[in-house]
Each structure stands twice: as C-alpha cells, then as structure tokens.
Amino acid sequence: MAQNTTPTSQKEIVILGGSYGGVSTAHYLLKHVVPCLPNKGSYQVIIVSASSQAMCRPACPRALISDDMFPQEKLFVNIPKAFEQYPKDSFRFIHGTATELDHTNRTVSVSLEIGSTEKIDFYALVIATGASTPSPLLGLNRDDKFLRTNWTAFRKELPTAKSIVIAGGGPTGIEIAGELGEFLNGRAGWFSSKLANPKVHITVVSGDSRILPALRPAIAKKAEEYLAKVGVTIVKNARVKTVAPHGAGTDSATTKATLTLEDGKTLDADLYIPATGTRPNTSFIDKALLTADGRVENNASTLRVEKAGPRIYAVGDAASYARPAVHLILNAIPVLCANIKRDLLLASRKEKSSVGGDRLFKEDTRETQMVPIGKSKGVGAAMGYQLPSFLVWLIKGRDYWLWTTGSLWSGKHWAKES
Image (cartoon, rainbow, N blue to C red; front, side, top):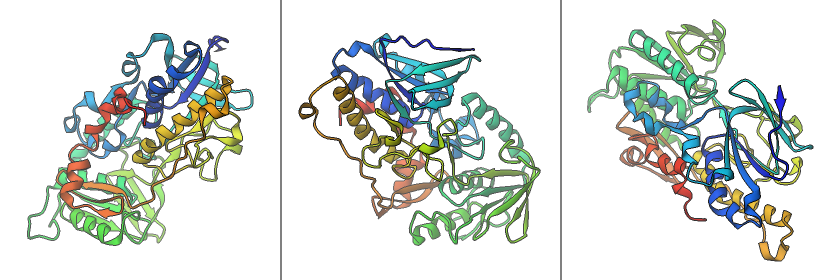
C-alpha cells in the first residue's frame, strides 16, 4: 500500500543510489551546500538505495575468490552509519528501489525493502543509480546479501572446476582472468613465456581484435604476456552467440555451460562469467529522458537533466555526461554540487549576481586505465602516460582501491569544498 510520509514544509533533496556518486553527493551537500542555504533546517538529504551497504565494486574480481582477500569491514560499509555525523533531521536513508520517476509531478515511487511502497515529493533530485553487471558476482545488482550468496556458491565450485570461460576482454574480464589464473594455477617462472599444463583452463573471449581496447596496443600486448604466465588463453575477434542452458552465468554463477561463438565454435565451461559491460539502472525513468544506450541524458557540462525540469541531475554510470569510470565520477561531484547549490539559492530568491555562474565539467579523455593481473603484476596508463607494472600494483593492484574508499564512504574525502 503506497503512502506518502513526506512533510509538505520539508524540501527533500533526493539522491537515488548508494554508491560512489550517491554517497559522495550526499556528503558534499550536507557539508558544503545545505549549511549555506537560507532556512537550512527546511532541507533534508535523502539517499534511496537497494543496499544498505556501500562497497568497493572494483575489488570484485579478487573479492569473489575468498573473504580472506580483503578485510570485510573495509570492503562493505554501512551507509546509514556513515551519515550519523550529521544533524538527525538533515539526512534520511531509505532502504528500497526506485520503481517510477514522475518528473512532471516531481515524485519518485520507491519499493521499500520491508515490502511497502513510498512516494516521495522531491524538491531536487540526483539520479545516481549506477549500472548492473550481467554476472551476479561483480557488483551490487540487488544488495550485499545477494552478492555474498553468489560468491559463496561460486567458491564452492571453484576447487573442482577444470575449465572457466570469461566473456569480455575489457578491464573487468582481464582482472578476473588474472586473479583466477594466479589463484588456481600459480605463475610461470621468470624464464617461461607461458604456464605449461595449467591445472584449470581459463579462456577469455574478446569481441575485439585485442584485449583492453581503451589502452594502446603495446600495453594490451604486455597484459597478454602476463595472462599467459598464469595459464590464461585469449580468443580474439569472437563473441558469445548463445549460452546453454539459458541463464548460465547470469541467473546462476555456478551452472556448467556450453557457449557457442558467432563462428560456430563451442566452448564448454564448468564456470562461465560474462563480463561484457554493464546495463544502466534506469528502467524506472521515462524513455524520453534516456539516450539510445539507456543512460539518462544530461548536460555534459552542468550535469542537469534539462528535459526533466528544474533541479534534476544525473551522475555516475547511469548518466550520459562521460564514460563510466570512478575517477570521472569523483571529478564530477564538486561541479554537480556547485550547480545544485546555485539552483537552490536562485530558487530561494537570491539575486543571480550574488550566486555566480554555472560550474562546468569537462571529461578528461586522456588514456587512463589500470588493470591488475594477479597480486603482483599489472598494466595501465594514467593521464596519457604508460605506467610500469610496479606502479599499477602500488596504486590499484595491492588492494583494488580499498585504500581510498574509507575516506569516500565516511565523507572525509569531501571535507573541503573543492
């Protein structure tokens, strides 16, 4: 039964999504925007998230192997607890999933985790719902319990698996292959170019003529060399056409599968992991607001969703302003929040001359991607410069960014207005 518990006097700033974009936006608004508004006590920041836990999603390729890979209290962090530092009435967490956005009447319907429905009247809205992965092993497609259940099932099958197929030659597929290869097969010696007789046959199917297409060919070639040393085979210019039985790898992470490629060849897999990109979590949004690939169409400079009406914004993997990447989300947060601040001040009848102009986001398109391959190797580039394997390990490979996420989830990263 639907119910509206939103008090009419309250101005709700609703953030849909509890990951990098949503949590960062909420902290930034509570620290630097709401305190500057006239009658600041009338504003409440609300996060709506299907999971009460935030997690370091980039760590999934290693974390899926065992809980011993990372300290679990750092890998998963309770969102409501992270916001206890703010005045009680200034923040609310809603454990649920957005099911319908009515941008004309400015309401969002939420299916609550407890089973009922709530309709929220919003004064401002930030869409930061992210994207889902085809495999249930690689992110919070539902919540942390669903992810852990799939990890547990996968880990039970891992010791007896003789063949693993990973679809996708992008960073996630290559990271999974490297982690599983090293964990199951070990690593070839210094003087061997490949691992002879690996215990488990691990195959990566890449639709491109090479792996890691966002990086220059020389870096991708180095990645292939590292993968060969942990027993991974690459099949290029190939795409998975059909999977039998239906749902193997997607509905179930542990079903044995036969994959038929577009050229008619077949691969048998004891375990199959599709790592072929993501799908934006935007099914609850009017298609008129979406781009052809399903992302919310927002202004690439101001991050406003201009077709939806005033004070509606989008950031992160569900938005069209930039390619999906955590560093680009973090670069966008100060811009997004500065424009929210400007819009809220103007709506409170402040003079335009006193609030300044829009702040503009510009996507950094330089070659930037780091791909660990096992626990000691990696390839990548940052801001157009190729990185040695040691630096990829130091920055990302040792703990898949876990050294950075504590300050993000706690809000310390946003302590200063930037």
